[in-house]
Amino acid sequence: MYETYKLMELSPVNIHQKSFYGKARLLRYHDGKTVSLQSYNTVVCQIKDNAFFIKLWGGYSATSLRHINSFLALFDSDIKLSKKQWERLEVNEPYYIGDLRNKYFKAGF
Image: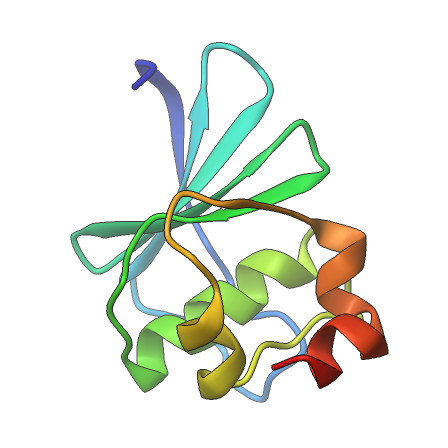
């Protein structure tokens, strides 16, 4: 992976919660094209080129999914994944962000 140049705390987006209390962090990489989400101590997903979402963690927790949905909302406020949708995404498979909001893409889940 790339060396991080900036580590920032993620704030809740589109939910009624004031803070994630340091449990969700954004990692921006030197390449300028990659932003990853660290939920607790695990890097769970990333966005590349402001266009592709990549799931990096095969697990699930309700709290991590809240972190993931807030992370996605930074790039597209219409996206909110359900547990079922998250679990059906393949690890290390890039998904076009626009497809995650597409009702037909979601219907396939």
